[in-house]
Image 1: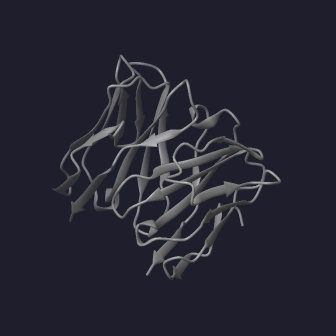
Image 2: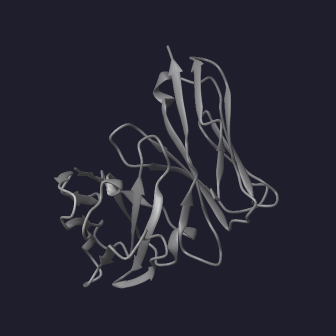
Amino acid sequence: TQLLEQSPQFLSIQEGENLTVYCNSSSVFSSLQWYRQEPGEGPVLLVTVVTGGEVKKLKRLTFQFGDARKDSSLHITAAQPGDTGLYLCAGARASGSRLTFGEGTQLTVNP
Amino acid sequence: GAGVSQSPRYKVTKRGQDVALRCDPISGHVSLYWYRQALGQGPEFLTYFNYEAQQDKSGLPNDRFSAERPEGSISTLTIQRTEQRDSAMYRCASSLSAGGPNTGELFFGEGSRLTVL
């Protein structure tokens, strides 16, 4: 059973388009992180959200944590080829220490 | 180096052999994590240490897998009697804080690619 469900699993778009990636769970998380991973490399942290309803912006990326702290979204505006990569959400539950990752969304931005 | 270092980067072994994968975390990082990752998928949690204490090993698949961090720095993940299904990328990550990922960023190493023939 996957604790964090990400959708879509694959996304291929043209440069300049907007996109949204979703991360959903039936569990409540005390914090949720988004990572980006390029081929041959380890995941690299983009953002951490901890408050229900929180919205964080990182240049063209907007992250939102759901009010109930069970879901999150990542919106990219005017995607660029450099945004290509595997996007991973990861949640930590207050009762434990494990950071559980979703299965990832493989994004390809075509020039 | 400044980052998390893992060795070997690539390991090919025959079924039934034991393997040991090493992780050298960022200096001063309290927490150390082991994950296993299939190509194109998210990392799967294996185990986690704060200093030398193993906090959570519930992700280890079976008793052939074990991990230690005897001096609170370098960690070794050992797989005994390897099987073909153990083939994967094994990633180590470290975090500055002792409170688990609730409070800190995980820094990942480049991984050890294990192939069991």
